[in-house]
Length: 318
Ligand SMILES: NC(=O)c1ccc[n+]([C@@H]2O[C@H](COP(=O)([O-])OP(=O)(O)OC[C@H]3O[C@@H](n4cnc5c(N)ncnc54)[C@H](O)[C@@H]3O)[C@@H](O)[C@H]2O)c1
Image 1: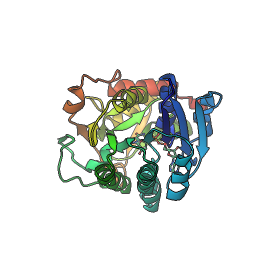
Image 2: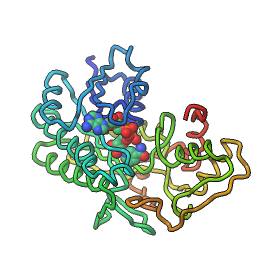
Image 3: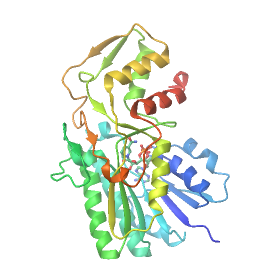
C-alpha cells in the first residue's frame, strides 16, 4: 500500500522534529519544510538517512513558493507548526509574528486551496485566550483577548482556518498547546535559570514573584496525541485544549533546576509583581473535559515533565 505523504511546516523545530520521528515510525512519508529561523538541522539529523524522509529549506510565509512546492510532492496532509515561538523576542518586533506566525498560516491555507489538499493539523496555543487568571478555560470560552502579538497571530490564524475550511471543505484539527517541554527544548524559563546559575551559582534572579503558574506538557505525550487524533476523520474544524491537570510555579521550576544542578544554597531574588514580562500570561489552567471524554490522558504530570526535561539537559553545553 502506498504510504500517506505528510508535510510538516516547522519540521526542524523542537516539536516538529519529534512529530517527524513519530510519523516515520507510523509508516508515513514525511516532508519537513523549515527555513531555520529558530529550527536546527541537528534536530532532524537522525531522519536524513530515512528514505521516507525529505527536508526542504524554504520560507513558508512566501505563498507562491510554498504553493509551488506542494505541486510537486503529492502531499495529502499538512501539519502546520511553523511559527515564531520566541514570544518574548517578538514583543519588541511584532512583524515577526505577522510573518512567521500568521502569514505562514495564510500560505498553508492558500497552498492547500490551490493544490486541492484537505487535511490539516494546526498547532495553536493557550495564548489565544489571553489573561484568564482564575478561570479554567474551555474551548468554548468567549471573549478571546490575546495579550501577546504571538497570541494575536495564532487567533487570527484560527479565524482564517475557519473560513478556509468552510469555503474549501478542509478537515482541520486544532490543538491549543500549553507550555511544551522535553528533549530538544532550546529556550524558556528552564534554560534561563540554568544559564543564570552557571554564571552565578549562589544567586538566581526570578522575573516576577515566582508564583506564576502554568501547566507543562511533555513533548512525547503531545506528539503521540497529535498523531492519534489527526488520523481520525472529521468534518470542518475541531478544537481541543490539550494539557495536563496540574501546573508548576516558577518557584518550583527554580527549585527543580537547583536540585538538578546540585545547588542547595541559592538565594532567590525576585524582580516583583506577578508578571514575568509584558505579554506573558502569569497563570492559566485549562478545562480539559473535552479531550478527557475521548479517553486521552498524558503519561506525565506537569512536575514530571519538568523533571524529565531536566534529566535530558546537557548542562555543560548550555
Ligand atoms: N513549545 C511550546 O511551548 C508551544 C506552546 C504552544 C504552541 N506552540 C506551537 O507549536 C509549534 C512548534 O513550536 P516549537 O516549540 O517546536 O518551536 P520551534 O521554534 O522549535 O519550531 C518552529 C519552527 O518553525 C520554523 N519557522 C518559523 N518561521 C518559518 C518560516 N517563515 N518558514 C519556515 N519555517 C519557519 C522555525 O525555524 C522552527 O524550526 C509552533 O507553532 C508554536 O507556536 C509551541
